[in-house]
Amino acid sequence: MKNYIITGRPGIGKSTLFNNIINTLKKSGIIVGGIKSPEVRDSKGIRIGFKIIDLMSNEEGWLARRNHYSTIKVGKYGIVLEESSRIIREALRKALEKADVIGIDEIGPMELKINVFRTMLEQVLGSNKPKILVIHYRLRDRSILDKIYKVENEKYILTEHNRDLLNKVLPRKILMEIKEITNKK
Image (cartoon, one colour):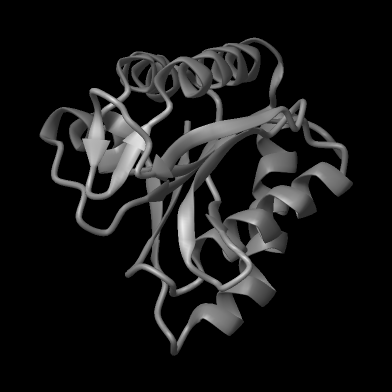
């Protein structure tokens, strides 16, 4: 089954495009499961961490927080392991069981430090459901990349020059293809 891959440098709009695609699918009755991990900023605009959100239930918790004590660190962020693992496990389990499409924003070094994420991601990548995947632009994990690129893919590298066009065209294009695949007219 096809993967739709979105990548590009930080701050270019990958999550905005992902959210536009997911919202377009949901509004058309497509069941979307998975996770997203938006950044969280304080009142001064300083990034303090990342949330993890279940795309089906909207349950959320902390993925990582600045200066959080954890045995797993990525830069200045400590992984909130118990909370993030629980949400990831449940969200991706439900997506595998009930969703028409699975979305993940993002597959990156931080998320891959969580064993539950890696295990569940391998199950997701092995499933025959269409997937919308945001991939960190510096992801170098060969085992994960091999699984992603083992099936048919459409890869979109977001830039300042194409992001407006992709936000306009891609959600509808993917919706039409997903409707065809899932027989949801």
